Length: 258
Image 1 (cartoon, helix red, strand yellow):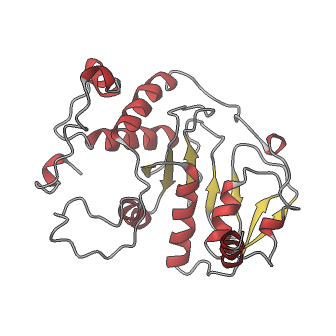
Image 2 (tube, rainbow, N blue to C red):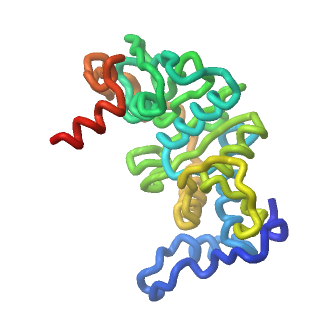
């Protein structure tokens, strides 16, 4: 997608109206390194293209965090009939808490298995992989929805952010709109007829610029070791919130009755 393809009534520049001394410096630093753009959103696409090349994924979509990327992956699996609400999704008993939480609040039952893993694990029986703690050249897993994290402790520490890697153009196109309130940015919002239910999950321009700058430096390194594995996390299998008798409705009622 080029800036010429963007609908003309949407003007994302300038980015707010802050005094120069309060503005983040990433966009200026990109210009110093020779990057140019007609529309600032091209920065996000440049970051996605560079990340796709680095990981070996056909498509890469920048998002605001890894957990939201996992939710989009599960939603896509629902849309395509690979899973249905009420199905059991299996996670390692030792993993970060947010992926099973987002699965639970989206209507799935949760099971845990005691397995060893490093860098990535699959959310069974889907093809969604949590890759929050892996950052390697050529890391993309074929025929997967693989989600990365750029949280401050990760190899590419933007602060907060993530990337969906996929070889499905259809999934990529859907997730592009779903992560941006269902909008097609080639269309004027006043004329758009929404066909995709969306969320506010897109990556900001400043964060994408920071990701580009860091990735340029990281490309000189060859990372082979994962930043974390199953030993980094406490077991979740005894947590009451993940039991079958826990429901989001009962949770809300409990909060209301406090």
